[in-house]
Length: 343
Image 1 (tube, rainbow, N blue to C red):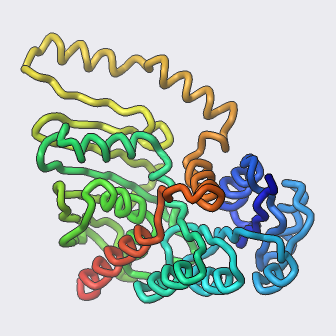
Image 2 (spheres, rainbow, N blue to C red):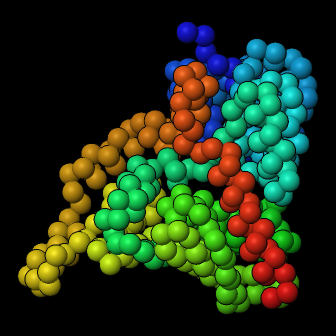
């Protein structure tokens, strides 16, 4: 079978170098034809590092020269996702891009409509959707095994260095940079977000929001997303509470290992035993951890999303991240922006 040709835009950036390019090179069905980036010096070094023969400083030139390419990967700032996606789709290329999808609902809708018209695939690197634990929780919620209504709590900390340059000066930057993952996971678990509320805890001297909590009200319960600034390293944790049980999910990628507690009765001896056992890493965790260290890109969530996208092109498989999810994520972000406008 002929391999699908790939053009990686933003190919000299950290995200592309650490995640996108290695995953494309690992996939048996794809071949990286060229990289695109404005930084030519770093672009040359990246091509040499990965053994990629061609590079361009504009997507227009890459699309003109690389006629055999079937896929365009946008590892670029969100503000150019729309223009690059539209250009690529018009040239008959499938598009996968980093989050968030675009800058407005109208841009998202135009991307989706053009892809449908051209019978092309569009997806996003909503990487938390690449972890099996996220799918399992969806299944438990749908079956009602955690309870009729659930409460989800996301805790996410950040430092100045963790805020991407393209969000500098945006009052609600922390939501666009850090809350996107929690928003699309909440949409997936709760199915629909009917209402949004925001509590701003603090701002800096430039009126940029530093600490805040977002509440998303959905079909199956409530999702609380708390983001706070810290001087220490970035960290996060997820807890899910229901009338029938609770789940505690450590930070990803170790989030693939979940702690599920559903005590049928208050037997304190059993509860103490469970708490003690939690301190001992189970065999499965050690095995998967070793696999991650040895294979890296093969077990990255990026690879899961990317491989699914490739298979959706080849075999018309259902997308793990459909473009409509990107649109709904932007809808929630815009609601947050609107609420915070006068805060």
